[in-house]
Structures are given as C-alpha cells and as structure tokens.
Length: 458
Ligand code: UDP
Image 1 (cartoon, protein in one colour):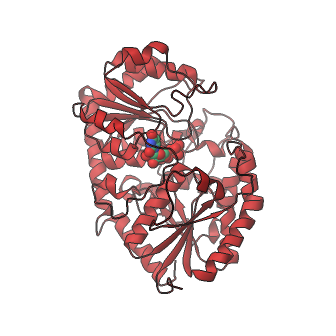
Image 2: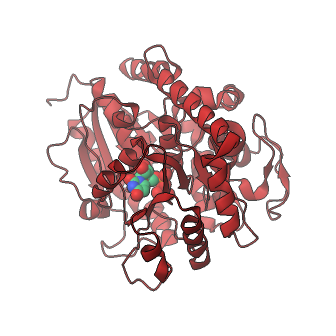
Image 3: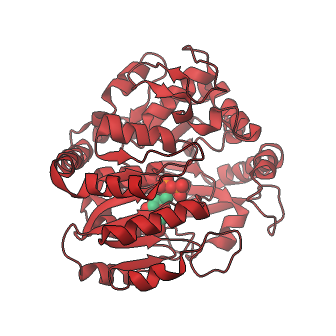
C-alpha cells in the first residue's frame, strides 16, 4: 500500500553475473529517477549470492526454476527446459502475489527469460526488454529469426554473411547460439524470444547510439531499439554512487588494487575471460608464455586458480616463480576498479558484452579472445567498427599461438598502432559519457522511457 503513488517496475533476470549487472545498473538509474524497483530471479540465487539482500534499495523476490536447489545448473539444457515448463508457472504465481501489493507500470525482462513474456501478458502488464548485448546482435538475431535478410548455409563457418550496417561477417563470427553447432535448447530459447517479440512494447539497449548509429538507424523502421547505455555503474563514469549496492556471485580480491597502486601508469596487462569461459590447457600455456616473454606486468583472473579441480587448466609450474613481482593471479577481481586504475594499459578479454562496455567507458584498449554466444561478433565490432582493440587470430581449434598473443600485446602497447588504438579508445570514452549527460542520446532515451511509464504508455 505504501507504494501506491510511486512508479513501480519489476525486473526479471537469470542470476548470472553478466545478466544481473546490467539489470542492476538500470535499476539504479530508475531508482534515482524515483522509481520503485523489484528484481525477480530464481530461488537458487538466494543461496549463492554473497550479499545480504535485506535493507537494499532494490527489493528482491525469488521463484523456483523447477529444479532442486542442489541440482547442477551447468546442465543448461535441463535448466532452460525446466524454466520454460515449471519456472514459468512459478513466476506466474509470484507475479500474481506481487501484484496484490504492487501496481507495476511495466515488467522489464532480459533476453534470456522469454518464458516470462506470456506470463506478463496474461497479467495485463506491459513488458519491456533490456537487450543486454550490442544492438548489432539484436539486429542479427531479429533479422535471422524473422527471416528478414538472406543468411547463407550456417553449417559452413567460412561462408560470408552480408547484413545492413555491419562489416561482412564469417558465419563463425555470428552469435554462436544461432549456429547449428550450438545446443538446440539455446537456439530454441532465442527463437522463443524473437517469435514473441511483438508482445514486447519497448526494447532498451545497454549500448549507446554513437558507436552503433547505423545499426540503430537500420532497425528503426523494423523494430526500434533505444540504447540507454553504456549501462554501467556510476562508479565507472566517475560519478558518486548514491546506491553502491552490487550483487557479486563471486567474492572479489580487492587486494589487487593495492598491488596496482605500486605500478607505473599504463604498464599492466589485465587478463580476464569473465564468469563462464574456461581456457583449454594449451591456450592457458600460450597466454602464460606470451605474458612471460612480454616482460610486462599483468593481473590475471583465473577462477579455478589453486582449486585442484582436474577439469580446470593449470598454470605452468615455473610461471608464477618466473613472473614474481610483475604478475598477480587472482580468482576474481573487482573489475570495475581495475579498469578505472591508471596502471592498466590494456585488457585481454573474452569480449563478454559487459566487459566490452566497461572498456568502452574507461578507454582501455582490448585484445580479443572471444569464446561463444555474442563474443565473436563483439570481437569483430571491437576490431572493425569501434577500432579500440585487436582480435587474436586463432587456428582451427580456436587456439591463439604464443607469437600471435605477443604480436597483439605489442600492437596495443607499443608504437604507432598502440597510439592510434588508445586515441580511439579515449574518443569513445568521451562520447560514451556525453551520451549519458543531460541532452545526450542515452539520457533522452531513458527520459522518454520513464515518461512513457508515467503515462502508462510504454
Ligand atoms: N567481472 C568481475 N570480476 C572479474 C571478472 C568479471 O567483476 O574478475 C565482472 C565484469 O566487470 C562484468 C561481468 O563480471 O560486469 C562479466 O560479464 P561479461 O558480460 O563480460 O561476461 P560473462 O561473465 O557473462 O561471460
């Protein structure tokens, strides 16, 4: 009842770090505009999250994904299927209960919970989508799943794909979830989303107009996407955080910031492949050799470091000894603080979209080692469109050689190519910030969304 007069919004997300972070950043922006925000995620998250979820400005609610709490959710097929069949029912029950006390103007989902669309429609509430990847990916998926453009045979990774406003892509650079080599449940998940997309009233993007102008324009008369990004925490924009609440699924080792404090400006290579990617042993050896040979300082995030897990790759025995003093390995970093640190020179990244926008907004050049989902497309965008980084060339088994890694490190840290990339990275950083300032493109798009909410007109 206390919420009666406040604008209220519910958000729905899977409890994955890369999904929760952009939802939370949008939640913070909505809260600072006076909106009351509830985030609904699955019950297993309640048990995994490190934070106390009481007394935060965001209210959390949970529904069961239909699997036992101790079920191994790396079995993504079982998870996706259970969410569709059972999770949707549980979400429906939760939404029915929540609407007894809340008057939601809108439910904002992200792309990976398509089962929520029909439930939200059944409750008569407008649905918005926060597209948590580049707008280019929205354009590719939409065109593919709705048969708008010609796509070649996706069985051949070398075939070429010509799409409006994008560089010519090899099939292997398309988002992996739509390729025949991807498990069907991922393909079906996105198919479910794009077949129901007409029920989504507004699509917001975490990107910003200036870096994807032609793509955003090309979608305008098909199905508009309104970028409101870069959707990052206020900290990354150098702003004071009024609500610095974060949801970390892993605990960050903050001591690495003190270690960075003792390094000279633009001298350290930051290496991280996000929360899911696992390197092959061969690839880990090649990164280790390249870092050893480079003689440069580095901070490397290896989630399995010291875990003795036989499925995880190990660092070569001599590596830590030989790089003592100039190298630090952590299990999880406070990545935002790392990227804001003046000691960081470049980022060897898997090009997850969150990490990518975090580099765009901090002006940190990137060396791309993409793995799956949108990451390969992002790497093409980084090298060819944004031009703030280089893409590691890999062999047929997706292994980048030691020499290739060393070449890319030199390319972004030394000589004219490094200066060119850094200049471009700084330009992007400035335009990213401008787009979020009053009158900027993202600021205007978010304002429009909030005004539409107020008019219950999204
Ligand atoms: N991240 C972090 N510490 C790390 C590695 C990653 O805080 O050591 C954060 C990073 O800032 C980003 C998110 O985790 O916000 C990873 O999302 P991304 O989309 O880049 O990759 P994913 O983990 O989904 O593959």
